[in-house]
View 1 (cartoon, rainbow, N blue to C red):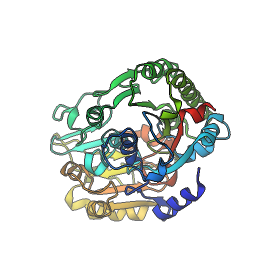
View 2 (view 1 turned 135 degrees about the horizontal axis):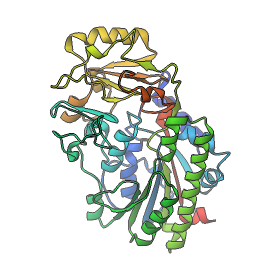
View 3 (view 1 turned 180 degrees about the vertical axis):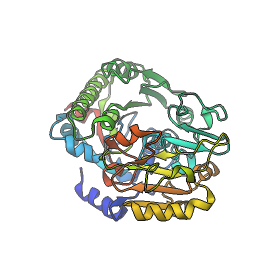
View 4 (view 1 turned 30 degrees about the horizontal axis):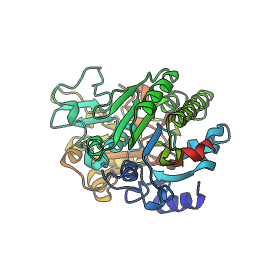
Length: 412
């Protein structure tokens, strides 16, 4: 890793104790455009040329995305996991920022569409869609009671089209190795609860892919463990070790199935990093001094709109006459950024070119605590009990690796 690059990125994007997205250049949002460009296609803006200028004549790109494994996690585990040090020696680790919010639902919709959250409109894990009178979780596409939303189609969760038809039109074959079926690509599914099943799924992708090709492999296990146990835990260290053992084995499989190792580029990245919060000090908006639930707008059936964004990216949809008072209370009581809707739009926090979908889903206030979770203990106590969290603007949430190496350099 070029520490000078990291220092410069930190200094440029720093906003007090927070770190803002580098949408204009060194951002996660530009990875899909970079992958496409390396394979001779154009799906959107790419990273600056310096990120990949040493790689020529690439016919296959393989991206391993380890959910939540940000730069802080890479640095924290590199002495224990030899694979990370070996990868550094074989290639390079370029620091990037995540998008805002630094959470999976927003970031992965960006990754699959090459659009920013302000364009695709997924404001976080939880979405309130006023036009449909629905409040739901974006990725499972479920209400909190476990039922599917009835007044919005899953195709309308994100206001964006996937990049994969464009890749296909450019002659690039795309394979996805994920726990979830994927439309418009060749899927190779595995069991997220059993990492041993990842190896066979990846092996199928490596064997079947015809170049030029793009293989995307998604591993969410570290993130899930961090929520329950925290980053500073033995359980997290164990799952990180197992995850990268599987990635290393997948690279060995790739080498066995690939003829020209110099034309295959292997990338490791993450959608965001993580911080450990303190469940005993996390903030309950449904309790004093906030007692905020009566101030919320409601669905047509009277249900308060609690769930929009996430506990590190709280989007508050408030009764118009309560916005100013709630703002004053939050600013007084919290060590947090509390942003009015217009300020969010003026500063492009979620990205430029906001769509009408995004604007109507964006909260009247957005709350980003420095290092705690902020949510509703009356109906979602479990989120306040999570230790490892993300979604906010802490540097450890926002800084991620974009590690690259050719297959032949990894085999040396």
